[in-house]
Image (cartoon, rainbow, N blue to C red; front, side, top):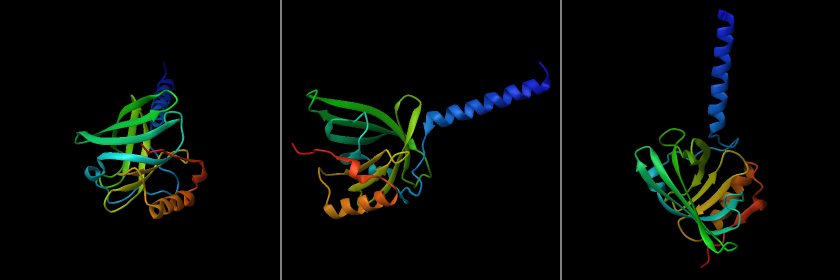
Length: 181
């Protein structure tokens, strides 16, 4: 094989590898959004109730949705999502892992539920006491309002919805999660 051909083949392999790596770990943040700084991952750990979400197939039809975060090790967080399907009359659970995707003091994580495939998980608003959070995914199709309680004060909802709208989210498409017993 000639040197020019070897170089071209090497370039193709490197380019393909970079493209696959980008597809496998798509951890972007929506345009105009900023992850919270400073962010304290230890304060974020624990149970959160989903107040609202942009619906997608893995949560479709679920109520009483919670996400519980716990440390697996210094760099990895266990993500335990649960929700109740009234249609199937059973609880559904999905366990994954998260790692920091930005600076250590920045609310950017990458989350995986399916092997090497990661997605962006960006905390774009959080109160001082870590009771309420607004989380954006990779793009405008993923958004969550989370609370340490089964409800969220209206003024916090309004503040978070206003921020989401300013970023281009179609907040009228949010699914409001039933957290009533």
